[in-house]
Image (cartoon, rainbow, N blue to C red; front, side):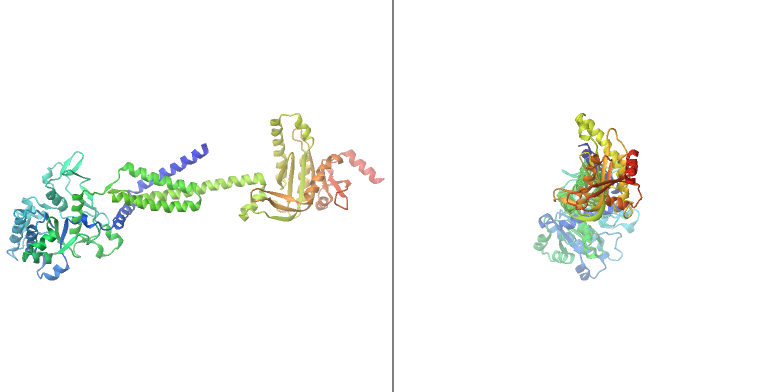
Length: 621
Protein backbone atom coordinates (compact mmCIF):
# COMPACT_ATOMS: atom_id res chain seq x y z
CA UNK A 1 0.00 0.00 0.00
CA UNK A 2 2.82 2.39 0.87
CA UNK A 3 4.49 1.64 -2.45
CA UNK A 4 1.28 2.37 -4.36
CA UNK A 5 0.71 5.59 -2.41
CA UNK A 6 4.29 6.64 -3.09
CA UNK A 7 3.77 6.01 -6.81
CA UNK A 8 0.56 8.04 -6.84
CA UNK A 9 2.23 10.91 -5.03
CA UNK A 10 5.00 10.95 -7.63
CA UNK A 11 2.44 10.99 -10.46
CA UNK A 12 0.51 13.79 -8.75
CA UNK A 13 3.78 15.71 -8.41
CA UNK A 14 4.48 15.26 -12.12
CA UNK A 15 1.00 16.57 -12.95
CA UNK A 16 1.48 19.58 -10.66
CA UNK A 17 4.86 20.31 -12.28
CA UNK A 18 3.29 20.08 -15.76
CA UNK A 19 0.58 22.54 -14.68
CA UNK A 20 3.10 24.98 -13.21
CA UNK A 21 5.26 24.74 -16.33
CA UNK A 22 2.27 25.46 -18.56
CA UNK A 23 1.31 28.53 -16.53
CA UNK A 24 4.90 29.78 -16.69
CA UNK A 25 5.14 29.18 -20.44
CA UNK A 26 1.93 31.14 -21.02
CA UNK A 27 3.92 34.31 -20.29
CA UNK A 28 6.34 33.58 -23.13
CA UNK A 29 5.50 35.47 -26.33
CA UNK A 30 5.44 32.37 -28.53
CA UNK A 31 2.94 30.63 -26.28
CA UNK A 32 0.87 33.80 -25.98
CA UNK A 33 0.50 33.77 -29.73
CA UNK A 34 -0.28 30.07 -29.67
CA UNK A 35 -3.08 30.70 -27.17
CA UNK A 36 -4.50 33.43 -29.38
CA UNK A 37 -4.42 31.19 -32.45
CA UNK A 38 -6.17 28.47 -30.48
CA UNK A 39 -8.82 31.01 -29.52
CA UNK A 40 -9.21 31.91 -33.20
CA UNK A 41 -9.92 28.27 -33.99
CA UNK A 42 -13.08 28.36 -31.88
CA UNK A 43 -14.51 31.09 -34.11
CA UNK A 44 -13.71 29.05 -37.21
CA UNK A 45 -15.33 25.95 -35.69
CA UNK A 46 -18.43 27.87 -34.64
CA UNK A 47 -18.76 29.67 -37.96
CA UNK A 48 -21.41 32.29 -38.63
CA UNK A 49 -24.05 33.14 -36.06
CA UNK A 50 -27.72 32.58 -37.05
CA UNK A 51 -29.56 35.45 -38.71
CA UNK A 52 -31.78 36.15 -35.70
CA UNK A 53 -28.69 37.29 -33.78
CA UNK A 54 -27.54 39.77 -36.43
CA UNK A 55 -30.82 40.96 -37.93
CA UNK A 56 -30.72 44.27 -36.05
CA UNK A 57 -27.50 45.41 -37.74
CA UNK A 58 -26.93 46.47 -41.33
CA UNK A 59 -23.88 47.81 -43.16
CA UNK A 60 -24.06 50.45 -45.86
CA UNK A 61 -20.87 49.63 -47.66
CA UNK A 62 -18.52 51.75 -49.70
CA UNK A 63 -17.83 48.80 -51.97
CA UNK A 64 -16.36 48.33 -55.42
CA UNK A 65 -19.74 49.09 -56.95
CA UNK A 66 -19.63 52.48 -55.22
CA UNK A 67 -16.09 53.18 -56.43
CA UNK A 68 -17.12 52.36 -59.97
CA UNK A 69 -20.31 54.46 -59.84
CA UNK A 70 -19.11 57.73 -58.29
CA UNK A 71 -16.68 59.69 -60.45
CA UNK A 72 -15.53 62.11 -57.74
CA UNK A 73 -12.45 61.61 -55.62
CA UNK A 74 -13.65 59.84 -52.43
CA UNK A 75 -12.62 62.67 -50.02
CA UNK A 76 -15.34 64.76 -51.74
CA UNK A 77 -18.23 62.33 -51.27
CA UNK A 78 -19.83 64.45 -48.53
CA UNK A 79 -23.19 64.72 -50.32
CA UNK A 80 -23.48 60.95 -50.80
CA UNK A 81 -22.85 60.39 -47.08
CA UNK A 82 -25.30 63.21 -46.26
CA UNK A 83 -28.06 61.72 -48.40
CA UNK A 84 -27.48 58.28 -46.88
CA UNK A 85 -27.69 59.86 -43.41
CA UNK A 86 -31.00 61.58 -44.21
CA UNK A 87 -32.41 58.46 -45.85
CA UNK A 88 -31.54 56.24 -42.86
CA UNK A 89 -33.09 58.76 -40.44
CA UNK A 90 -36.30 59.01 -42.50
CA UNK A 91 -36.50 55.21 -42.71
CA UNK A 92 -36.46 54.86 -38.92
CA UNK A 93 -32.93 53.61 -38.24
CA UNK A 94 -32.11 53.69 -34.52
CA UNK A 95 -28.49 54.80 -34.77
CA UNK A 96 -25.79 55.27 -37.40
CA UNK A 97 -22.07 54.76 -37.05
CA UNK A 98 -20.31 56.85 -39.70
CA UNK A 99 -16.96 55.08 -40.06
CA UNK A 100 -15.52 57.78 -42.29
CA UNK A 101 -13.13 60.49 -41.12
CA UNK A 102 -13.03 64.11 -42.30
CA UNK A 103 -9.65 65.52 -41.35
CA UNK A 104 -9.75 68.88 -43.12
CA UNK A 105 -12.51 71.08 -44.65
CA UNK A 106 -12.98 70.90 -48.43
CA UNK A 107 -14.69 74.30 -48.82
CA UNK A 108 -11.81 75.51 -50.99
CA UNK A 109 -12.62 72.84 -53.58
CA UNK A 110 -16.31 72.07 -52.98
CA UNK A 111 -17.86 75.08 -51.23
CA UNK A 112 -21.12 73.35 -50.23
CA UNK A 113 -19.88 69.92 -49.17
CA UNK A 114 -18.97 70.60 -45.52
CA UNK A 115 -22.16 72.51 -44.74
CA UNK A 116 -24.36 70.03 -46.59
CA UNK A 117 -22.92 67.13 -44.53
CA UNK A 118 -23.24 69.04 -41.26
CA UNK A 119 -26.86 69.94 -42.03
CA UNK A 120 -27.66 66.30 -42.74
CA UNK A 121 -26.07 65.36 -39.41
CA UNK A 122 -28.15 67.92 -37.52
CA UNK A 123 -31.30 66.77 -39.35
CA UNK A 124 -30.70 63.13 -38.40
CA UNK A 125 -29.93 64.04 -34.79
CA UNK A 126 -33.01 66.26 -34.33
CA UNK A 127 -35.82 65.75 -36.82
CA UNK A 128 -34.82 62.19 -37.63
CA UNK A 129 -34.15 61.21 -34.00
CA UNK A 130 -31.24 59.06 -35.21
CA UNK A 131 -27.94 59.63 -33.37
CA UNK A 132 -24.98 59.65 -35.75
CA UNK A 133 -21.71 58.44 -34.24
CA UNK A 134 -18.79 60.17 -35.92
CA UNK A 135 -15.08 59.47 -35.89
CA UNK A 136 -13.04 61.46 -33.40
CA UNK A 137 -10.45 63.67 -35.17
CA UNK A 138 -7.84 65.01 -32.71
CA UNK A 139 -7.13 68.01 -34.93
CA UNK A 140 -10.70 69.23 -34.36
CA UNK A 141 -9.77 70.05 -30.78
CA UNK A 142 -7.65 72.91 -32.14
CA UNK A 143 -10.08 74.07 -34.79
CA UNK A 144 -10.87 77.30 -33.03
CA UNK A 145 -7.20 78.22 -33.13
CA UNK A 146 -6.62 77.06 -36.70
CA UNK A 147 -9.41 77.38 -39.27
CA UNK A 148 -7.72 74.78 -41.46
CA UNK A 149 -9.16 72.07 -39.23
CA UNK A 150 -12.61 73.58 -38.69
CA UNK A 151 -14.67 70.74 -40.23
CA UNK A 152 -18.33 71.46 -39.60
CA UNK A 153 -19.29 67.81 -38.95
CA UNK A 154 -16.50 67.32 -36.43
CA UNK A 155 -17.42 70.44 -34.54
CA UNK A 156 -21.09 69.48 -34.49
CA UNK A 157 -20.36 65.92 -33.31
CA UNK A 158 -18.08 67.25 -30.57
CA UNK A 159 -20.71 69.67 -29.33
CA UNK A 160 -23.50 67.07 -29.36
CA UNK A 161 -21.39 64.33 -27.78
CA UNK A 162 -21.42 61.77 -30.60
CA UNK A 163 -17.82 61.73 -31.63
CA UNK A 164 -15.84 58.64 -30.75
CA UNK A 165 -12.71 56.61 -31.44
CA UNK A 166 -12.62 54.91 -34.81
CA UNK A 167 -9.39 53.14 -33.82
CA UNK A 168 -9.32 49.35 -33.68
CA UNK A 169 -7.25 47.49 -31.08
CA UNK A 170 -4.63 45.14 -32.56
CA UNK A 171 -2.69 42.35 -30.90
CA UNK A 172 1.04 41.92 -31.46
CA UNK A 173 0.35 39.81 -34.57
CA UNK A 174 -1.82 42.62 -36.03
CA UNK A 175 -5.01 40.60 -35.56
CA UNK A 176 -8.05 42.43 -34.19
CA UNK A 177 -9.54 40.27 -31.45
CA UNK A 178 -10.26 42.92 -28.82
CA UNK A 179 -11.60 46.45 -28.72
CA UNK A 180 -10.81 49.22 -26.26
CA UNK A 181 -14.18 50.72 -25.35
CA UNK A 182 -13.28 53.80 -23.33
CA UNK A 183 -10.28 55.78 -22.12
CA UNK A 184 -8.72 55.08 -18.74
CA UNK A 185 -10.50 57.49 -16.37
CA UNK A 186 -7.42 58.43 -14.34
CA UNK A 187 -9.64 60.51 -12.08
CA UNK A 188 -11.51 62.33 -14.87
CA UNK A 189 -15.32 62.46 -15.05
CA UNK A 190 -16.85 59.77 -17.23
CA UNK A 191 -18.53 62.26 -19.57
CA UNK A 192 -15.10 63.58 -20.56
CA UNK A 193 -13.80 60.19 -21.65
CA UNK A 194 -13.72 59.34 -25.34
CA UNK A 195 -15.56 56.15 -26.22
CA UNK A 196 -15.18 53.73 -29.08
CA UNK A 197 -17.74 53.98 -31.87
CA UNK A 198 -19.44 50.78 -30.74
CA UNK A 199 -19.75 51.86 -27.10
CA UNK A 200 -21.08 55.34 -28.00
CA UNK A 201 -23.64 53.71 -30.32
CA UNK A 202 -24.63 51.27 -27.54
CA UNK A 203 -25.11 54.21 -25.15
CA UNK A 204 -27.43 55.91 -27.64
CA UNK A 205 -29.37 52.69 -28.28
CA UNK A 206 -29.88 52.01 -24.56
CA UNK A 207 -30.29 55.63 -23.52
CA UNK A 208 -27.74 55.00 -20.77
CA UNK A 209 -24.21 56.30 -20.40
CA UNK A 210 -21.52 53.92 -19.24
CA UNK A 211 -20.73 54.07 -15.50
CA UNK A 212 -17.64 53.12 -13.53
CA UNK A 213 -18.70 51.43 -10.31
CA UNK A 214 -16.74 49.74 -7.56
CA UNK A 215 -17.54 46.28 -8.92
CA UNK A 216 -16.99 47.07 -12.60
CA UNK A 217 -18.15 48.98 -15.65
CA UNK A 218 -21.88 49.10 -16.37
CA UNK A 219 -23.99 50.01 -19.37
CA UNK A 220 -27.40 50.25 -17.77
CA UNK A 221 -27.94 46.90 -16.04
CA UNK A 222 -25.32 45.15 -18.17
CA UNK A 223 -21.91 44.63 -16.59
CA UNK A 224 -19.06 45.04 -19.10
CA UNK A 225 -16.06 42.79 -18.29
CA UNK A 226 -13.41 45.51 -18.73
CA UNK A 227 -12.46 48.67 -20.60
CA UNK A 228 -11.16 46.37 -23.35
CA UNK A 229 -13.34 43.43 -24.34
CA UNK A 230 -12.90 40.37 -26.53
CA UNK A 231 -15.01 40.85 -29.65
CA UNK A 232 -17.52 38.04 -30.02
CA UNK A 233 -17.45 38.04 -33.79
CA UNK A 234 -20.74 37.22 -35.46
CA UNK A 235 -18.88 35.50 -38.28
CA UNK A 236 -16.36 36.01 -41.06
CA UNK A 237 -16.47 38.97 -43.42
CA UNK A 238 -19.79 39.25 -45.20
CA UNK A 239 -21.80 38.01 -42.21
CA UNK A 240 -23.87 41.15 -41.62
CA UNK A 241 -26.56 42.22 -44.05
CA UNK A 242 -25.22 44.75 -46.54
CA UNK A 243 -26.45 47.47 -48.84
CA UNK A 244 -24.20 49.19 -51.33
CA UNK A 245 -23.88 52.94 -50.72
CA UNK A 246 -24.85 53.43 -54.37
CA UNK A 247 -28.16 51.60 -53.94
CA UNK A 248 -28.94 53.26 -50.63
CA UNK A 249 -28.29 56.80 -51.91
CA UNK A 250 -30.31 56.07 -55.04
CA UNK A 251 -33.28 54.93 -52.95
CA UNK A 252 -32.93 58.00 -50.71
CA UNK A 253 -32.82 60.44 -53.61
CA UNK A 254 -35.86 58.84 -55.27
CA UNK A 255 -37.68 58.83 -51.91
CA UNK A 256 -38.15 55.06 -52.05
CA UNK A 257 -39.11 54.97 -48.39
CA UNK A 258 -40.47 51.42 -48.51
CA UNK A 259 -37.13 50.04 -49.67
CA UNK A 260 -35.20 52.14 -47.16
CA UNK A 261 -37.40 50.92 -44.31
CA UNK A 262 -36.96 47.34 -45.43
CA UNK A 263 -33.23 47.81 -45.19
CA UNK A 264 -32.78 49.83 -41.98
CA UNK A 265 -35.98 50.43 -39.99
CA UNK A 266 -35.43 49.72 -36.30
CA UNK A 267 -31.83 48.75 -36.91
CA UNK A 268 -28.34 49.99 -36.13
CA UNK A 269 -26.70 51.19 -39.34
CA UNK A 270 -22.95 51.29 -39.96
CA UNK A 271 -21.60 53.19 -42.96
CA UNK A 272 -18.01 52.72 -44.01
CA UNK A 273 -15.49 51.23 -46.46
CA UNK A 274 -16.39 47.71 -47.52
CA UNK A 275 -13.63 47.21 -50.04
CA UNK A 276 -9.97 46.16 -49.85
CA UNK A 277 -8.85 49.53 -48.48
CA UNK A 278 -9.85 49.15 -44.83
CA UNK A 279 -9.57 45.48 -43.90
CA UNK A 280 -8.05 43.68 -40.92
CA UNK A 281 -7.04 40.21 -39.89
CA UNK A 282 -9.54 38.65 -37.48
CA UNK A 283 -9.93 35.12 -36.09
CA UNK A 284 -11.56 33.99 -39.33
CA UNK A 285 -8.47 34.95 -41.31
CA UNK A 286 -6.70 31.99 -39.66
CA UNK A 287 -8.57 29.41 -41.68
CA UNK A 288 -7.75 30.87 -45.09
CA UNK A 289 -4.84 33.31 -44.95
CA UNK A 290 -5.72 35.52 -47.94
CA UNK A 291 -6.82 39.16 -48.15
CA UNK A 292 -10.22 38.00 -49.37
CA UNK A 293 -10.94 36.73 -45.86
CA UNK A 294 -9.86 39.81 -43.93
CA UNK A 295 -12.70 41.78 -42.36
CA UNK A 296 -13.66 45.44 -43.09
CA UNK A 297 -13.26 47.77 -40.14
CA UNK A 298 -16.92 48.76 -40.30
CA UNK A 299 -17.93 45.12 -39.83
CA UNK A 300 -15.60 44.80 -36.84
CA UNK A 301 -17.42 47.75 -35.28
CA UNK A 302 -20.69 45.96 -36.04
CA UNK A 303 -19.54 42.81 -34.20
CA UNK A 304 -18.35 44.92 -31.27
CA UNK A 305 -21.70 46.71 -31.07
CA UNK A 306 -23.58 43.40 -31.28
CA UNK A 307 -21.42 42.02 -28.44
CA UNK A 308 -22.26 45.01 -26.23
CA UNK A 309 -25.98 44.96 -26.99
CA UNK A 310 -26.38 41.20 -26.61
CA UNK A 311 -24.23 40.92 -23.49
CA UNK A 312 -22.60 37.83 -25.00
CA UNK A 313 -19.14 38.66 -23.76
CA UNK A 314 -16.13 36.36 -24.03
CA UNK A 315 -14.33 36.33 -20.69
CA UNK A 316 -11.50 34.24 -19.36
CA UNK A 317 -12.47 31.51 -16.92
CA UNK A 318 -11.56 32.29 -13.28
CA UNK A 319 -7.93 31.58 -12.47
CA UNK A 320 -8.85 28.87 -9.97
CA UNK A 321 -10.89 27.12 -12.68
CA UNK A 322 -8.01 27.42 -15.12
CA UNK A 323 -5.52 25.88 -12.67
CA UNK A 324 -7.85 23.05 -11.70
CA UNK A 325 -8.62 22.27 -15.36
CA UNK A 326 -4.92 22.20 -16.25
CA UNK A 327 -4.12 20.04 -13.21
CA UNK A 328 -6.90 17.53 -13.92
CA UNK A 329 -5.84 17.44 -17.57
CA UNK A 330 -2.22 16.71 -16.61
CA UNK A 331 -3.17 14.19 -13.93
CA UNK A 332 -5.41 12.17 -16.24
CA UNK A 333 -2.66 12.13 -18.85
CA UNK A 334 0.19 11.11 -16.57
CA UNK A 335 -1.88 8.46 -14.79
CA UNK A 336 -3.00 6.99 -18.13
CA UNK A 337 0.54 6.94 -19.51
CA UNK A 338 1.99 5.43 -16.36
CA UNK A 339 -0.67 2.88 -15.50
CA UNK A 340 -2.42 1.75 -18.71
CA UNK A 341 -1.10 -0.68 -21.35
CA UNK A 342 0.38 0.98 -24.43
CA UNK A 343 -2.64 0.43 -26.72
CA UNK A 344 -5.06 1.73 -24.12
CA UNK A 345 -2.74 4.67 -23.47
CA UNK A 346 -2.83 5.63 -27.15
CA UNK A 347 -6.62 5.38 -27.25
CA UNK A 348 -6.90 7.34 -24.01
CA UNK A 349 -4.57 10.01 -25.42
CA UNK A 350 -6.64 10.42 -28.59
CA UNK A 351 -9.81 10.52 -26.53
CA UNK A 352 -8.28 13.07 -24.18
CA UNK A 353 -7.30 15.40 -27.02
CA UNK A 354 -10.78 15.20 -28.54
CA UNK A 355 -12.37 15.83 -25.15
CA UNK A 356 -10.17 18.90 -24.61
CA UNK A 357 -11.23 20.37 -27.95
CA UNK A 358 -14.92 19.66 -27.30
CA UNK A 359 -14.76 20.87 -23.69
CA UNK A 360 -12.98 24.16 -24.40
CA UNK A 361 -15.22 24.78 -27.42
CA UNK A 362 -18.33 24.19 -25.30
CA UNK A 363 -17.01 26.74 -22.81
CA UNK A 364 -16.33 29.15 -25.67
CA UNK A 365 -19.91 28.87 -26.85
CA UNK A 366 -20.97 29.64 -23.28
CA UNK A 367 -18.81 32.79 -23.31
CA UNK A 368 -15.91 31.39 -21.28
CA UNK A 369 -12.34 31.26 -22.59
CA UNK A 370 -10.15 28.36 -21.48
CA UNK A 371 -7.15 28.07 -23.77
CA UNK A 372 -7.14 24.86 -25.77
CA UNK A 373 -3.44 25.30 -26.44
CA UNK A 374 -2.71 25.56 -22.71
CA UNK A 375 -4.65 22.37 -22.14
CA UNK A 376 -2.68 20.71 -24.95
CA UNK A 377 0.66 21.97 -23.62
CA UNK A 378 -0.16 20.73 -20.12
CA UNK A 379 -1.20 17.41 -21.67
CA UNK A 380 2.02 17.13 -23.72
CA UNK A 381 4.30 18.03 -20.82
CA UNK A 382 2.52 15.48 -18.63
CA UNK A 383 2.72 12.97 -21.48
CA UNK A 384 6.48 13.42 -21.87
CA UNK A 385 7.07 13.28 -18.11
CA UNK A 386 4.79 10.26 -17.80
CA UNK A 387 6.64 8.41 -20.54
CA UNK A 388 9.97 9.14 -18.86
CA UNK A 389 8.58 7.96 -15.53
CA UNK A 390 7.10 4.87 -17.15
CA UNK A 391 10.37 3.92 -18.81
CA UNK A 392 12.33 4.65 -15.63
CA UNK A 393 10.06 2.44 -13.53
CA UNK A 394 9.96 -0.17 -16.29
CA UNK A 395 13.77 -0.20 -16.32
CA UNK A 396 13.81 -0.66 -12.54
CA UNK A 397 11.24 -3.43 -12.82
CA UNK A 398 13.21 -5.08 -15.61
CA UNK A 399 16.38 -4.99 -13.51
CA UNK A 400 14.49 -6.34 -10.52
CA UNK A 401 12.87 -9.18 -12.46
CA UNK A 402 16.14 -10.08 -14.15
CA UNK A 403 17.73 -10.34 -10.74
CA UNK A 404 14.77 -12.39 -9.53
CA UNK A 405 14.94 -14.65 -12.59
CA UNK A 406 18.65 -15.16 -12.07
CA UNK A 407 18.04 -15.93 -8.43
CA UNK A 408 15.20 -18.39 -8.98
CA UNK A 409 16.03 -20.06 -12.29
CA UNK A 410 19.67 -19.19 -12.98
CA UNK A 411 21.69 -16.97 -15.24
CA UNK A 412 21.42 -19.26 -18.26
CA UNK A 413 17.63 -19.16 -18.32
CA UNK A 414 17.56 -15.41 -17.77
CA UNK A 415 20.03 -14.81 -20.59
CA UNK A 416 18.11 -17.11 -22.93
CA UNK A 417 14.81 -15.37 -22.28
CA UNK A 418 16.39 -11.94 -22.66
CA UNK A 419 17.94 -12.83 -26.03
CA UNK A 420 14.97 -14.69 -27.52
CA UNK A 421 12.11 -12.63 -26.06
CA UNK A 422 10.05 -15.82 -26.07
CA UNK A 423 8.92 -18.38 -23.53
CA UNK A 424 8.40 -21.76 -25.12
CA UNK A 425 8.43 -25.46 -24.29
CA UNK A 426 11.70 -26.27 -26.06
CA UNK A 427 14.99 -27.95 -25.20
CA UNK A 428 18.54 -28.67 -26.40
CA UNK A 429 20.74 -31.76 -26.23
CA UNK A 430 24.15 -30.81 -24.89
CA UNK A 431 27.17 -32.32 -23.11
CA UNK A 432 27.31 -31.32 -19.42
CA UNK A 433 28.59 -32.41 -16.03
CA UNK A 434 25.90 -32.93 -13.41
CA UNK A 435 26.62 -32.66 -9.70
CA UNK A 436 24.25 -33.81 -6.96
CA UNK A 437 24.99 -32.86 -3.36
CA UNK A 438 23.27 -33.86 -0.14
CA UNK A 439 23.61 -33.17 3.60
CA UNK A 440 24.71 -36.19 5.60
CA UNK A 441 22.24 -37.13 8.39
CA UNK A 442 19.95 -34.21 7.74
CA UNK A 443 16.72 -36.08 8.57
CA UNK A 444 17.96 -37.15 11.98
CA UNK A 445 19.29 -33.65 12.63
CA UNK A 446 15.88 -32.08 11.97
CA UNK A 447 14.02 -34.34 14.40
CA UNK A 448 15.56 -32.71 17.45
CA UNK A 449 15.56 -29.09 16.27
CA UNK A 450 13.03 -26.25 16.14
CA UNK A 451 11.76 -25.73 12.54
CA UNK A 452 12.73 -22.06 12.53
CA UNK A 453 16.25 -22.95 13.60
CA UNK A 454 16.47 -25.63 10.91
CA UNK A 455 15.41 -23.20 8.21
CA UNK A 456 17.92 -20.60 9.38
CA UNK A 457 20.77 -23.13 9.46
CA UNK A 458 19.77 -24.57 6.11
CA UNK A 459 19.72 -21.12 4.50
CA UNK A 460 23.21 -20.46 5.83
CA UNK A 461 24.39 -23.79 4.44
CA UNK A 462 22.77 -23.25 1.03
CA UNK A 463 24.19 -19.72 0.76
CA UNK A 464 27.70 -21.10 1.31
CA UNK A 465 27.32 -24.03 -1.07
CA UNK A 466 25.77 -21.94 -3.84
CA UNK A 467 28.63 -19.45 -3.58
CA UNK A 468 31.05 -22.33 -4.36
CA UNK A 469 29.01 -23.34 -7.42
CA UNK A 470 28.79 -19.78 -8.71
CA UNK A 471 32.50 -19.19 -8.16
CA UNK A 472 33.33 -22.24 -10.30
CA UNK A 473 31.02 -21.08 -13.09
CA UNK A 474 28.21 -23.58 -12.54
CA UNK A 475 24.49 -22.94 -12.17
CA UNK A 476 22.09 -24.23 -9.57
CA UNK A 477 19.22 -25.87 -11.41
CA UNK A 478 17.12 -26.66 -8.37
CA UNK A 479 17.07 -27.44 -4.67
CA UNK A 480 15.67 -30.87 -3.81
CA UNK A 481 14.98 -30.85 -0.09
CA UNK A 482 18.42 -30.52 1.47
CA UNK A 483 20.10 -31.41 -1.80
CA UNK A 484 21.35 -29.36 -4.75
CA UNK A 485 21.31 -30.17 -8.46
CA UNK A 486 24.05 -28.18 -10.22
CA UNK A 487 24.88 -28.09 -13.92
CA UNK A 488 28.28 -27.29 -15.47
CA UNK A 489 28.53 -26.79 -19.23
CA UNK A 490 30.36 -24.99 -21.98
CA UNK A 491 27.60 -22.36 -21.90
CA UNK A 492 28.65 -21.14 -18.48
CA UNK A 493 30.24 -17.72 -18.10
CA UNK A 494 34.04 -17.74 -18.56
CA UNK A 495 33.86 -21.45 -19.54
CA UNK A 496 36.53 -23.03 -21.70
CA UNK A 497 35.52 -25.76 -24.16
CA UNK A 498 35.33 -29.10 -22.35
CA UNK A 499 36.38 -27.80 -18.91
CA UNK A 500 32.98 -28.34 -17.24
CA UNK A 501 34.08 -31.69 -15.65
CA UNK A 502 37.22 -30.08 -14.18
CA UNK A 503 35.21 -27.20 -12.71
CA UNK A 504 32.56 -29.53 -11.31
CA UNK A 505 35.10 -31.77 -9.55
CA UNK A 506 37.00 -28.85 -8.09
CA UNK A 507 33.73 -27.33 -6.90
CA UNK A 508 32.53 -30.62 -5.42
CA UNK A 509 35.83 -31.17 -3.65
CA UNK A 510 35.60 -27.74 -2.05
CA UNK A 511 31.98 -28.28 -1.02
CA UNK A 512 32.51 -31.68 0.66
CA UNK A 513 35.64 -30.38 2.39
CA UNK A 514 33.76 -27.51 3.99
CA UNK A 515 31.59 -28.00 7.04
CA UNK A 516 28.86 -25.40 7.64
CA UNK A 517 27.81 -25.67 11.24
CA UNK A 518 27.02 -29.31 11.89
CA UNK A 519 26.33 -30.09 8.25
CA UNK A 520 28.56 -32.35 6.15
CA UNK A 521 28.14 -32.75 2.42
CA UNK A 522 28.28 -35.65 -0.01
CA UNK A 523 28.50 -35.22 -3.81
CA UNK A 524 28.01 -37.31 -6.93
CA UNK A 525 29.36 -36.17 -10.33
CA UNK A 526 28.72 -37.61 -13.79
CA UNK A 527 29.31 -36.23 -17.29
CA UNK A 528 27.20 -36.97 -20.34
CA UNK A 529 24.50 -35.77 -22.68
CA UNK A 530 21.31 -34.28 -21.26
CA UNK A 531 18.21 -32.57 -22.61
CA UNK A 532 18.07 -29.12 -21.10
CA UNK A 533 15.11 -26.76 -21.52
CA UNK A 534 11.58 -25.78 -20.47
CA UNK A 535 9.29 -28.57 -19.40
CA UNK A 536 5.65 -28.28 -18.34
CA UNK A 537 2.66 -26.44 -19.77
CA UNK A 538 1.64 -22.93 -20.72
CA UNK A 539 0.32 -22.48 -17.18
CA UNK A 540 3.39 -23.76 -15.35
CA UNK A 541 6.79 -24.67 -16.67
CA UNK A 542 10.21 -25.36 -15.25
CA UNK A 543 13.70 -25.10 -16.68
CA UNK A 544 15.38 -28.45 -15.96
CA UNK A 545 17.76 -31.13 -17.18
CA UNK A 546 16.59 -34.59 -18.22
CA UNK A 547 18.29 -37.84 -19.11
CA UNK A 548 20.27 -40.79 -17.82
CA UNK A 549 23.19 -38.54 -16.93
CA UNK A 550 21.09 -36.87 -14.23
CA UNK A 551 19.94 -40.19 -12.83
CA UNK A 552 23.48 -41.57 -12.67
CA UNK A 553 24.79 -38.48 -10.90
CA UNK A 554 22.06 -38.89 -8.30
CA UNK A 555 22.94 -42.58 -7.95
CA UNK A 556 26.60 -41.72 -7.41
CA UNK A 557 25.74 -39.30 -4.62
CA UNK A 558 23.71 -41.95 -2.83
CA UNK A 559 26.63 -44.47 -3.09
CA UNK A 560 28.88 -42.28 -0.92
CA UNK A 561 27.52 -43.81 2.26
CA UNK A 562 28.05 -47.33 0.96
CA UNK A 563 31.57 -46.56 -0.35
CA UNK A 564 32.50 -44.51 2.72
CA UNK A 565 33.40 -41.53 0.57
CA UNK A 566 32.50 -37.85 0.39
CA UNK A 567 32.57 -37.48 -3.39
CA UNK A 568 32.15 -39.95 -6.22
CA UNK A 569 32.64 -39.32 -9.91
CA UNK A 570 31.99 -41.56 -12.88
CA UNK A 571 34.57 -42.94 -15.28
CA UNK A 572 33.29 -40.54 -17.96
CA UNK A 573 34.00 -37.56 -15.73
CA UNK A 574 37.40 -39.03 -14.79
CA UNK A 575 38.38 -39.29 -18.47
CA UNK A 576 37.36 -35.68 -19.15
CA UNK A 577 39.68 -34.50 -16.38
CA UNK A 578 42.66 -35.62 -18.50
CA UNK A 579 44.85 -35.97 -15.42
CA UNK A 580 44.41 -32.37 -14.28
CA UNK A 581 43.28 -33.60 -10.85
CA UNK A 582 44.79 -36.44 -8.85
CA UNK A 583 42.12 -39.10 -8.46
CA UNK A 584 41.64 -42.36 -6.59
CA UNK A 585 39.95 -45.42 -8.05
CA UNK A 586 37.25 -46.71 -5.71
CA UNK A 587 35.98 -49.67 -7.71
CA UNK A 588 33.07 -50.63 -9.90
CA UNK A 589 29.37 -51.06 -9.26
CA UNK A 590 26.68 -52.59 -11.42
CA UNK A 591 24.13 -50.20 -12.88
CA UNK A 592 20.61 -51.27 -13.67
CA UNK A 593 20.00 -51.18 -17.40
CA UNK A 594 23.73 -51.10 -18.21
CA UNK A 595 25.75 -54.09 -19.42
CA UNK A 596 29.03 -52.68 -18.13
CA UNK A 597 29.55 -51.83 -14.45
CA UNK A 598 30.24 -48.19 -13.63
CA UNK A 599 33.70 -47.20 -12.48
CA UNK A 600 33.91 -45.04 -9.40
CA UNK A 601 36.58 -42.41 -8.70
CA UNK A 602 37.10 -39.74 -6.12
CA UNK A 603 39.58 -36.90 -5.62
CA UNK A 604 42.78 -38.18 -4.13
CA UNK A 605 42.92 -35.40 -1.54
CA UNK A 606 39.62 -36.64 -0.08
CA UNK A 607 40.92 -40.20 0.57
CA UNK A 608 42.27 -40.91 4.07
CA UNK A 609 45.94 -41.92 4.24
CA UNK A 610 45.22 -45.44 5.59
CA UNK A 611 42.88 -46.15 2.67
CA UNK A 612 45.49 -45.07 0.20
CA UNK A 613 48.09 -47.37 1.82
CA UNK A 614 45.64 -50.25 1.90
CA UNK A 615 44.92 -49.79 -1.76
CA UNK A 616 48.63 -49.62 -2.52
CA UNK A 617 49.30 -52.88 -0.66
CA UNK A 618 46.42 -54.57 -2.44
CA UNK A 619 47.78 -53.45 -5.78
CA UNK A 620 51.24 -54.92 -5.02
CA UNK A 621 49.75 -58.28 -4.20
